[in-house]
Image (tube, rainbow, N blue to C red; front, side, top):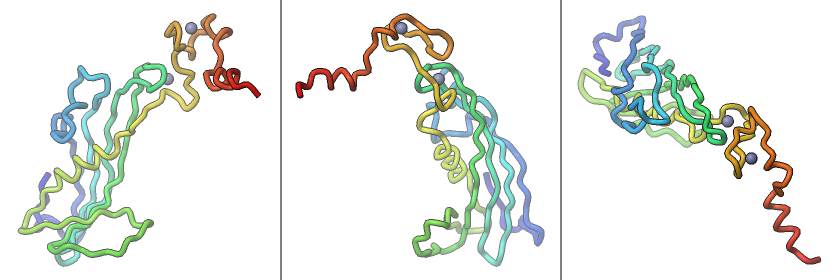
Length: 173
Ligand SMILES: [Zn+2]
Ligand SMILES: [Zn+2]
């Protein structure tokens, strides 16, 4: 996704566009619809680009959906993510003091054109959650019969002893 410096006018530049999932060449493992975890929408961009002298600032959001099985009960979950973009591009590296409050990214560019495609692909990759749950208190599957405990109660449960207590029972005091 290229930005031409000369296209950034006084009012800035508003980029509203989208890319198909295949655009995510950095994470091909979640692009195919056959995968359990995959991108289930296009990637929408809403970015505002401004320029002060040679420093270009890109602010806005990406928006896309993913489908992934719940980590506990395996039910497919649809999730819409909208990671923020805060990027400052300058011709020379900017040395900033470590500041935990500052979540702005700094990159360099040269020439009259900036390609922020790789950067935006990375924003998508970083936004992917490590673990997805269908709900915070998902009960998961019964370890014995595989029943989804969110929707049914199996009879295994009564005999089931929490393994942490089972260990305690073996300790002779
Ligand atoms: Zn679940
Ligand atoms: Zn069971």
